[in-house]
Length: 270
Image (cartoon, rainbow, N blue to C red):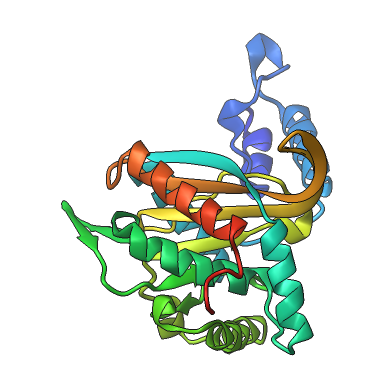
């Protein structure tokens, strides 16, 4: 590299060692550096936005990378008949109980986890801890990134209690008032992308939990019922579980249980 070219490259913080020279015997000359600087500038001008991976974005990036690297994830999917769930919600709203589908699913999940406790577990080193308490994290889309507030002892709560407590937690997330302790201690996580028109997806496990349930949209579909065709409300459920903690059959039985509770929603006293 010529002295003039080297000085210009150092001034522009350009790694000249990567350039191909056009001078005598392939030497890097000033015009090579000028062209390289111009190309780099043009490339930078094409960037619409730069987002520093700091704060909550850095936390999310770190946790997702750790989840992908440390777990043995398997995803099971099933389609559930949500007709009863839709009708149950309509009846509750008519009674003045402003229940969301997430509220109903939290109620259902708590009971399914009580029947299948091996899914209500976390990994601590080389020890699997199966928890007595059912604490469910709810993934919430906040302005500054994904947050997962935790509803504690869900299996001990009535439906109206779940509605009130979940509403308060989600409001705290949206107003950036959520406290760190309100996002700790989850034994299972629920994530719902149905409001975005998503049918099925592969949710990432929220370490150190055993599993996470992803819920898709509810939509009417023509369905074979007996010897005829009827319009039923259908939804996809996607359970991602860590195969290190639980095997496929127990995870499948848990997902079956969730589907059964959805299909008979409202039959259980809330």
